Image 1 (tube, rainbow, N blue to C red):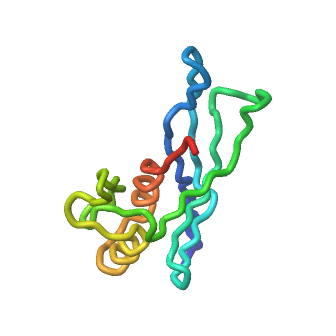
Image 2: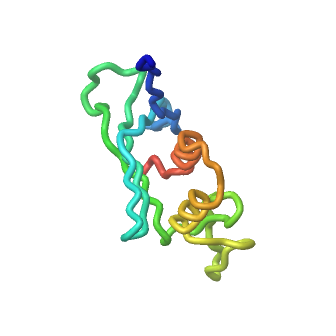
Image 3: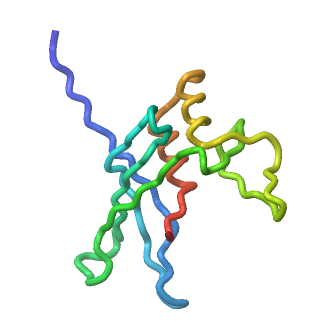
Length: 129
């Protein structure tokens, strides 16, 4: 038997451009650095490195880290996991669940392409906060 070498796949997504002023929009990419799945505290954290691929060593625009945290303070659609926003009265449309509970249930009950799920979740993150 031979040791097989398979090249690792980096999880990287294009995220919304950073608009500096009305005339300057900078492309950004986010690359997954680490994932923490804490079942005791009921949260899942993705740590990303955000970079500006079109800029090289421009002061003030260095790569930085950003965390996306899925816990039950974020409400999502029970079927799709899409983040929901409450109306003025605090009600959510349709059936909903806490985001950590959604991830936990999907991980237990469905066959999951983990990389695709991480990308999908990353695309929903608030990249401007």
